[in-house]
Image (cartoon, rainbow, N blue to C red; front, side, top):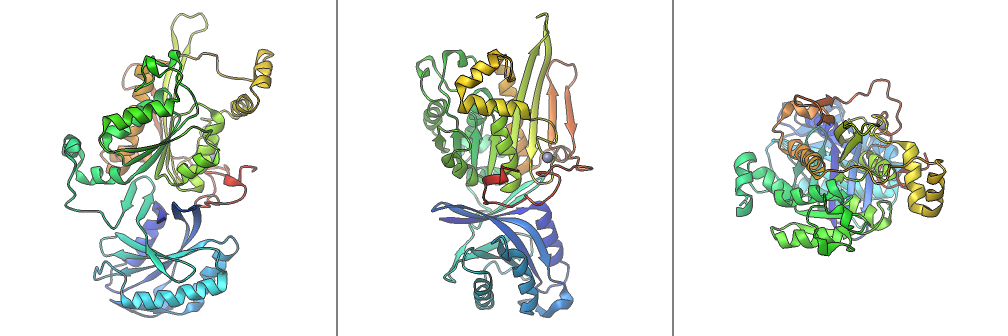
Length: 465
Ligand SMILES: [Zn+2]
């Protein structure tokens, strides 16, 4: 069982501004967190709100100790109580001591005893220490008042920043990644090796994405798709051979990636994305690639990014041919980076909700779908729709580069643009980029913050709303 925490970037900035405010004394803040639990695998805390404790409310503040009145803490516990949220107590170590001190041990034990007594024994809580360089170390406090180190602190925003205790400054890059390290440094290689990424959809873009992530040295992949390889897929499915026809797409990729043999661990799920096994994989991922053209699946991923503070890089390719077959009408690639401060796929009208209903029907009741489609009562893809491997692969490449930039930051200006369109049939660089636009945004998912970091709830992702 591992314990991790994900902070929204703006929460991290708020904490840093308060704790490292310039003097050399300790300061205090609290973070109220939603929770994400997969039994026996991972429990993850998800930041929802930061409450800072103003210095004039402290009883004393020194370089190695800070004392405050519990009454302020109880106000925070009240806020967390009704939805069983977790509370994270954060203080700083101005002198850079990168462990919890004996004073911390004693003080926190009393604090969390009070927390369990008051808010009940239904949630774990945690504490973080911010070091002088802004790095974070942490531990969770369990109901028996024992504590366990937090193995990963993610800061999720325009950038993706990972703090983990075993991060090494003298990391030895495996030889196979030396050329990549020459471009982007060893920190990126090390960060990629820590990531678990889910790829939803193992078709044209999904197979390309999975193989690119493997060759970059991503630590762990989960491939989600229930489709079988057909001969007509072989024009665009990376890693698949004629002898693979009839096998699960994810099994073919699993074998291919294992044979590449450069360290990526792979698991597969041959289920629809809303099945529990898939959801557990999503909940234990650090990032998700959306490589499905199923609108209903993308509605789920779109919500998931905000509820679980797990960035989703969604991609799509549209190829349309002119009515009279005289040539290409539209040849358009799309990359969307979804995180709390970006506008979502629904707001950007990248999901067709009518088609999502049709996709649900096709999956749940294929006979009735076929009948209705024949009678033109439901809309659906033209069957089969055009697909060309060079363009599906290009879109996958650009989506994976989006990940590299969010971690490494090689193109700072691009970070302000979560949505990108590429027009491959037009002259010039053929792209349009869109900053997050939240003005007059009444979307329940991206326009208000109530769902951000909400984590586990019934119903899952509040899907009935
Ligand atoms: Zn939205």
